[in-house]
Length: 257
Image (cartoon, rainbow, N blue to C red; front, side, top):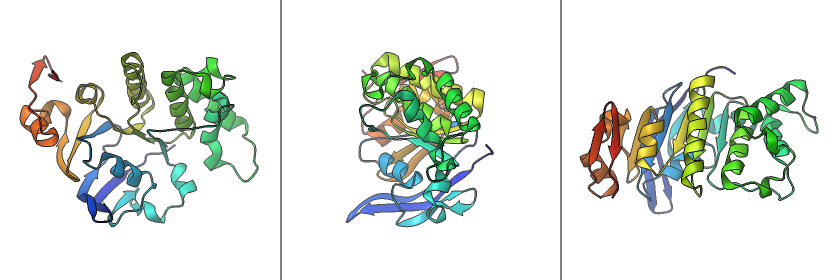
């Protein structure tokens, strides 16, 4: 599991006449957690779909270790980059262990069964995400937070160094939101996984990110450390609403009431 570098260069995309992204460029900070923020319609999800090969760029390119991902087979891409989307579905009778085992699919030949190393990585992923106790349970019977941990465990079983997450806390109550974000930070700090995630909550982004990428109308409006870029002026520019910030030691908080 070596390092993986991703760079977005002059990226543009449109749905028909609706231009969603325009000249977006940035490099993912290796070994860090980068969060993409922006108002609804700013292009966050489209950017995520492009970075995960679910869409093809209209202009510009996304480079993975210097190679345009458009030229990388999906199977090879999945051996180097793992992802969890915003909406995930699975047949109702699939067990948590079976779902996590799907993370090894890119590494197996046709009709090949998981070997000892695959089983080790599956068990490891379930232990890290604290879902081993649900091994035999159908994913459909688990709570929202438990299901999300199983999906992330599946991505972790791919054993990549780059993990992309689209709104991993959506539909979860606050307890599970914090639980998931703490686990994501653990994956980054303890296992050296570079993480890129899309979030809506500014304070959560500040608390659990090393870098923020702020989008506005399909363009990069700001990029940098949360403590350096979050100002009432930036928030108003990106979201169209004036919100004050307060500092407590080295931390910054956005007052959202």
